[in-house]
Image (tube, rainbow, N blue to C red; front, side, top):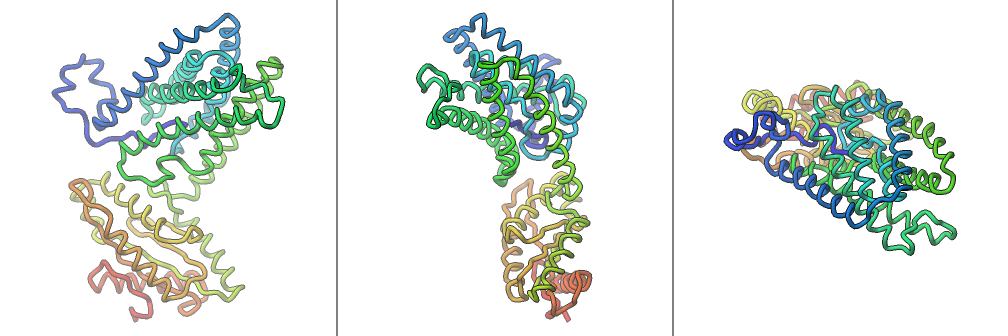
Length: 432
C-alpha cells in the first residue's frame, strides 16, 4: 500500500535559508515543499530502510540460486507492471486513499524465497519502473514519493522476514498440516501491519486529524492488499515447487487490476471528489429509491438540507485551499453524526443533504441539532476558521409524497434558518 497522491501535501515549506544552503539541483526537489516534520519522517524512513538493507545483506548474503529466483520474479513483476501500466495510471489518478498497486506480490515472494536485501532490491526496481513508466506523467506524483514508497515496502519486507525466522528451518512455504498455516498468516499480517502504520503516520503528519478511512484506507483497499500478499505467498510456493507454473499468476493478477479500476471508476462516477460524499445525481437516485421503499412499508423519512454559513467569506479571506479543507471536515463531521445507512451527499458549492430512512420529525431535528453542534466544535486556528451551518428539516409523509416535495420543504426550512440568523436548525413546520 502506498501513500496516496493527496496525503503528502504540505503548507509549511522548509525555511528558505535552509534551502539556500543546498546545491541548486537539490533545492529544486518537491520534497522540500512538505512540512518539516513530514520531510524528517520521509528521510528517516528512507535512511532506516537503507541501513537495514546493508546490515541484512551482510548478515544474510545471497547465494547463486537466490539471484536466479530474484531475476525470475523481478522479470515477472516488471512484465505484470508493464502490461497494466495504463490501468495503474488511471487508478493512481482516481485514488484519494492509500493506494494498492499490487507490487507486494513480487516483493513478498522475493523476500520469502531469497533474502530480505533482495526483497528490498525488488521494491526499488519495481517502484523505479512505476515512476519512470507511469507516475512521472502524473503531476502530483514526484520522484520522492516513489522513493519513499519503496522504502516503506522494504521495511515491511524486513519485518515479514523477521517473522519467518521464528519458525523452524525458516520455511513458511512447507505447509503439510493445517496448523502450519500460522506461519504464512503471520508473515502476511506483519507485512500488512508495518506497511499500513508507515502510511498512516505520513498521512497524519501531513494532514493532522483525519478519519481512519483516510489514514488506513477503506475495508476494500485493505482486503485488496491482503489478497495481493496472499498471492505473494502462493507465487513463492509455486517458484519453490513448480517454477514453470508461476506464469499462471499473471492472468488473474491482470484481471484483478482491471476489476479494481472498474470499481474505482464506478466510485468516481457516483462520488463527489472533494468531500467523498455522494454527488447530487447519485444521491437523488438512491434517495428516490429509499423513499419508494418507505412508501411501501408506510415508514417515515426525513431530509436535512445543510448549508455552510458565510462560506464565500472563508474562500475570500483564507483562500480556496482552506475552503476545500473546510468542506472536507464538514463532510467528515456529517458522516460521523448520522447513521451508516443514511445517505449523505453534496449538492454543490457549500450545500449538503442527508436522507434518513425510518426517521420521524422529532428524531430528525434532534440529529440535526447534534450535527450543527459538532460542526461548530470543529477546532479552529490561524489556518482553519470557525465555521457553522444552517440546517433545514423536511419530513415524509407529512410534507409531501415524493422526494421533490420533501426536498422543497427542507429547502424552505433552510431559508428560514438563514433568515433567523444562521447557525440553527429549523423544521419546515416551524418555518411556516
